[in-house]
Each structure stands twice: as C-alpha cells, then as structure tokens.
Length: 239
Image 1 (cartoon, rainbow, N blue to C red):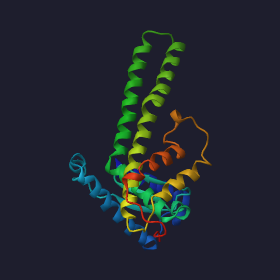
Image 2: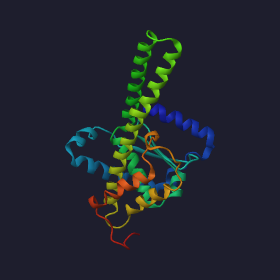
Image 3: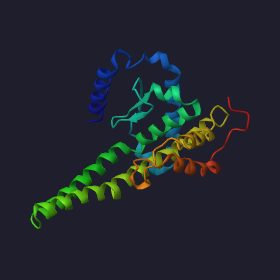
C-alpha cells in the first residue's frame, strides 16, 4: 500500500512538473549523506529505550527522495519513502534542514502514517455506526444533522488532536537528534526555534483545535522547553 501511494504521487508529480521533478541523486549527494547520518542517529536514540528497540529492529531504513515539488515541504509515505522538496532545501539553513529530515524520519519509525490511517478507519466506523443508528430512529432531516455533527465532532475531538500529538512526538525526537548531530557545533537546534518563531508571523489565525499541526508559536515554545535536555554548541562555534 505504501509503495503504491508513493508511485501514484510520483506519477502525478512528473505529470505536473515534467522531467525536472526528480533531479539526479548526485546533484544532492551531500543531502543523502546527511540523511544517512540522521537515520543512524535516530535509530540509536530509539534503541536506547527497550520498548522502541523492539519496535524498530525489524524495520528497513527509510529511503530519501529529493524532488521538485512546487512547494516548501517534506512528506513521509507508509512504505518508508521520505520526500524532501528542493524548495525546502532552498528555503532553510542546514540546522533547520536537519530538523525537518529528522522530523520525517521520526514519523516513519513511530509508524505515524499507519496510525493515521487507522485513526481515519476508526472514525469511519464510528460515523457508520451512528448512521445506522440514526437511520431507523429519525427522519431524513434530523438524520442528516446527526451524521454531519458526528463527522465534525469526531474530526475535531479525535482525528485532529491525534494528528497534533504525532507532530509533537516527531518534533521532540527530531530536536534531540538535531542537537546530538550538532554537538560539535555543526548545527544549532536554537535555529530551529527561531525558524518556528519566524513562521509564526505568517501563519493564518486558525483556532488551535482546528489545526492538523500545533501552531508555529506553540512548537517554538515546546522546543524551547527542551533546551535543558540537549548539549548546545558554544556560542560562536556554529559553522
């Protein structure tokens, strides 16, 4: 299923972007090397905790794909393909790029995509049960209101909070990985906090309970609270 989803996405991208959708791997060889370091560091951090070691020991390493997507973004597919848009590489500095890649790797090892599919499946089951119950007890107008309300409430009360929790988990691990890789001063996780604080000025004013992700300001605040857990490079040592 995961490979099929990626293949369908790749075909659509080639159709939209043409022959430049997938640049030659050697064009971004340094990014692929960086990705391998991130994967190794992520696996090491997770292997320290026994409950996670048993979960990831049988998982193949994720595979990076760099693409010209037409947007500043990165994606994780169920089959382990992690797509990094060239636009993202061009928009952020190296410390933030490490965090973005580590965030997607965390999604993969936490099996967030599979969990998300399960959450939507459970939501559909719940809505279907309500639909069957309401269809034999109410007229068509009331039935429609009940089903619509159930869909909205399940989205706001279950699916969206679940999505935000996954993003928080991925942020947490990615920040620790960024700090570990930057222990010698190559990357500075404080730049990730600054990036989110800058994004906060431009993001739309959407109520927190309607967001798929925590707000940029909330993410910056949370990551700032992790600073005491990481070894920061000394001031002036960032290359």
